[in-house]
Length: 183
Image (cartoon, rainbow, N blue to C red):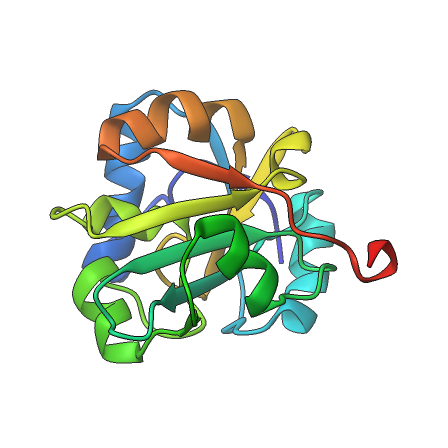
């Protein structure tokens, strides 16, 4: 794996949703770095990628309420355990669970293992609420996939919060998720 600045020199072979990600970031003047790799669908697989990016790829979870009428994209540090009860309480939603892959594809145009904040550009109906654990915002950079898990990006956290989210019409709800030892 190698770290490169910006989009691939020849993106014709890339998926259209990946090319759209690069187009949007470029149009917003957001500087980013990229590494290409074998499919990375778990946090464990992302550790080697993290070393190349020199940042940590967030754990991204696509969630919904019991009725499957409210959807959430949770970004949290990979080393924190996800406790449904804690997040449900912070959001005031009972019975959060993992949303179905079909909903992820329909709303974010991503498949399981590829979910990331970049998918919000595809949520034209603004049906997905972005939820970010406050620890993610303490890092200078965010690592994420460009809507496919065969590449990973390193983007300044400030650019995500100030430029990207504004451009895609989403706001983040900031939460505090406990670490296991805090309980």
